[in-house]
Image 1 (tube, protein in one colour):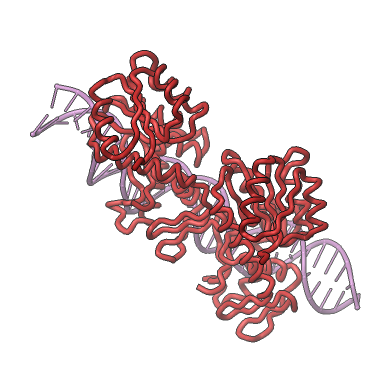
Image 2 (image 1 turned 30 degrees about the vertical axis):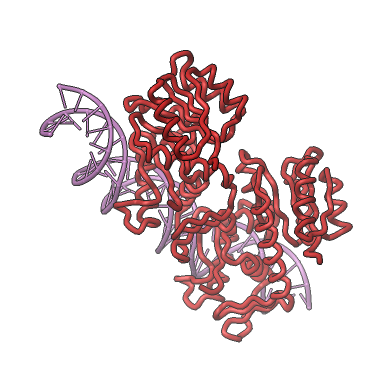
Length: 228
Length: 228
DNA sequence: TAAAAAGTATAAAGATTTTATAAAGAGGGC
DNA sequence: GCCCTCTTTATAAAATCTTTATACTTTTTA
């Protein structure tokens, strides 16, 4: 059996080995590259189903590799980063990374993210009907239902939720959300976002204190999870 | 067997081929046009049951084709668009498109939308009688009854209500309503709309202060709800 | 590990925008 | 002219957005 081909771009040999063993035992075909240059080459030759990219590469920064990949590669890229460099993570997400993991990571976490990303890119996500377990949103009718009851949302609330739903499973940064919903002039008004996230949770979550749909990624942004 | 005739207006030959194969193998009769001009002509000659229209046409913009079609063509139009142009999609829906698909799309998704659109317009034709709990409209006889009593509506009131009834459950934007009822030159006269909504509520709602049929979506438009 | 710092959640007050409604004025058909 | 409908105006009411204040949680530092 084969779940797909994954390219790992990382200079640390221990990490590469760990990933190789973990992924292979979960029936992924694994390719490895130790430098950015090598990684770009292998990506072009193999066109893998998913790429895991370490931001702390020696020869050229992971950011530059990410940008070069994104010029032609449209499938999922998951980045690895050390805990301290939150800024790097945000920058990478803004540059088109799909998800991130902070080192050291649990392998269960890694596999969950990989599966989520693969599932996501497989279904292409251009639905105008988005159906979670208890939540249903219809982008042409502009309606949101929870357990078949229409939920009344204000214009801003709806815009925000629709944006999340269209990017299910993916972390959206504060900057990105503020730019998309309030416009480029308001990317520093993080408080707006907090207020509206709280309002949405109050309306769509069964228990707003323990949200299962609108998840906080502290220091980075928020993530919408439909089904798990 | 024949499920109906579909006209595809798209300049990309690959897309046309893909649609032709997909649709024909699902027992639709397919006509194709590569330009807007050709598409308008074929639509007039064949009067297809549904039109699939690419917004990115070369000779005249898809929007202009859509507008010209909507001057006489009342069946379903599904638009195709590239992912980036969200503004285009909103504009097209405002101009009377029934649904949209973002390229690249899965063929399953496409077929689902086509079936949904055909089903919808079929039930619209057969049921030119629209029946809510306490409200009944007959689109061919141009009459509206509330609890079996005929309600007297002016021309504008009727046009507006019929438009709502044909789009039950869907939020209709101010722009769209103004364009459909008063014409493109009056899309800024939101006050007309408010006056007529108030008048309609006075006539069709049991309690105009707490409407259950004509729902306000503040900042966006209105939505008509038949039964709940 | 505990304290400090940074980031997040939430309610609620104030400001602004949007909507509702009545009623007066305008225009057209009979 | 009279009646009906449409358009315009004025004002009240409602809804939404923004800001403020404070409590809480997570992350970082020592």
